[in-house]
Image 1 (cartoon, one colour):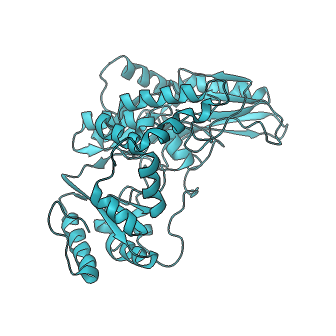
Image 2 (tube, helix red, strand yellow):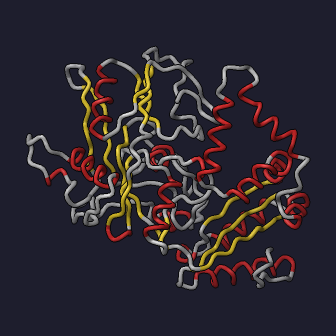
Image 3 (cartoon, helix red, strand yellow):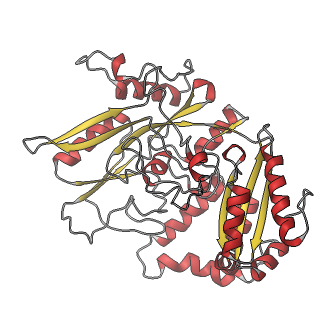
Length: 418
């Protein structure tokens, strides 16, 4: 709770773990009334360091950790087109659930740090990067969250903002001063889900919230503008206050779109001699048309390849053979437990051991990629999918033309890369 696995560490007055949304709001009120700093925390992966206390700040108020780990319930709505997640739901857990419920659909984040199981709320609060070209970064305008403000008397006030846009959970569905509200109704729904009670699948309402965005649906057009201006940035706070809130609000629940899963997928490693050619590839091949974008595109420089080879072979093989599921998550937690021991050598012992043993393990990156990694300075890993709309064929035509213009060899076979 007090130390991030990558960065951040401090002390806290107390740690609270509410088991329901109502308890979370009550805890928040008690914390702010005691004039303490509130630090909302999800899985505490430490990827951003934003959910652990820092004691070297000018703010002298005692920090309090409000952990939402127990609020893991999630369930589909709108016949699987969307999903509602409480704040502690992990992206790996969500991805597994959606693939089980609806094999032809997938959740937003299915790559990267999924075995750490960071929460969906953390993706909204801190951002998820821009690797996903079709889906865009994690964001939603449909959420249930709390804001803290002061009234004219200097007293703390907690306002619950409900933009979930789900039938039966709208504020207008409850009689004022009746003691019933969306928080209580969602708590009941979540408890039913936890106990295995099958309810009729919820639907989005016809209100402005029910029609609001639950993903960055304009991202495809923005990222393809190529106007010379910055087309996207991780600190984009547009939309509801929950987006990139970084702890300024307490996110309780969010609604997210699910996405069609590709029927076929190909991944390419493309190497370039200079940055100009790399940018030209991004512009002419990857971002040529918002209608047939790749699934994802990630840039790597020579240093990235060198670091993976020099220190990441063991981890790469572990991911290859163990996958990105629960076992990898368990091993990561063991590593974090060791690094959290009260010894001076503890924080680095695991990484140093892996680094020392690294050269005893064969190269994890295939030789043809290592050869390109050593000979070229810039690389891109591009994943492309077939969604039944010809997008894969369109991308392949552009890729073939681009590669052929440089080395007179088109990429056409399944086992070839450019």
